[in-house]
Image (cartoon, rainbow, N blue to C red):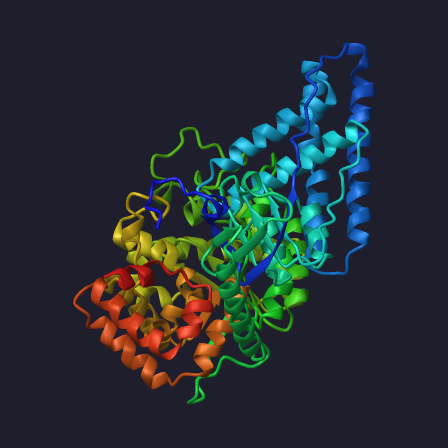
Length: 606
């Protein structure tokens, strides 16, 4: 046996086991098809003042030609998520702020078009990569890919189309959207990328196409050669390169068992999440892009419980207009109909940077700084434009407005006053809008959770955001590796807050949903339902497993477990208790359901 730190010999030397992020659940086995996208060289050439107009004309033609290339790819695809992703790329290319910045560099600094495109792209990417939110960091790759495509066009070159063979596992540093949708047209069995996260386009397309995918595997494209056998464990985020023969046979059996499990739970995707005693639990989807809606509906979501709107505000020099908000919301409502869509008003801050707001000094603790509703109340015109657009769109379907990071009743009343003002503005301008639009509050701060009974008297619904609620309650930064081990959702303080919010909603007669990561984890389903939560919102691919658990359970047994957990002496006892019950009742769900296995593995080591 090879000890840790020693160099393996012979065949063992070639075998590698790497870890990353499970972006689209499943198990895939196949030969690698390595995609090598070399960075496009950028000529740094100055131009004469007399050539400025011609250079700007060349840049504009390059944009039009790039648009046409993407349109050709889009035309070969069926309607759905892949076309929507490419459409989003085309919208970025049409952004007047982007083109004006490039043209300004050409005109004022006499830089050639290629150099100007690269400079502007680098500035945007640097800003996005500073964001604490993964979703916005992932959008930096969109800008990089678009810039490289424009650079190729300006050089008179066409990007080489990706043509992986059927049965292959695609391995790449990253996949541009155009490459990703080409993958969707082929019969590949898996995807692995060196960078990316849950919200990267490769992850979104993989989920929508049910292709197992692991992302964020450092330098994987440099460790694999074409034809190498690769095992993709996209449940636990593990990639095995050049496995042993006995290992390969074992994983083929695991894959077959997983596929049978998936077939079983997917058969219920059109059925309601109703417990054995008849209690219905509403399961909705968290969505960051319109492109994810098809996946949400396919997996059986009863609408969208959280639609993030922040991307509309990123990398712009002018705020999105009322009309832009209206058109996006209208499109989403029509796609999700007849189910409701909960639009969260913009959750921006120095952790999710935008050029629309001057953060003169980067905050030392953005999680507790000027962000979310606090920022919206300060940037009132941006806030009112969004509210007007949403109120207008609500005539096209059951739209709900959700206010993020509300600290208490006074802040909530200030936001509701803004909603009323938006209504008056629409009346004055004689614009059609829905008179009755439910407005709700996210409960993400302990201050709001503790007085949830008072919060409930002001709103039509509440939604528990456990990601921030856990972070604020336990005083930890969940993205800080040094304290990440303290991020434990079953901490008694967290559970008491969840129970209190659910009870406040019940007494007031309003709905209470839970839209944090806890909702998607099969380990926590019994506890959350047992605490009184009757609506869960999660990433779409988690819905079938959670639905199967609920349909296989009695409310009484869920409530009994929740009461036992609430009475636990500490979080260690609570975790052991939940793991014991859920592993006994739902072993396949914990193994195949995509839930994080961190404390499962910790318990097994004890």
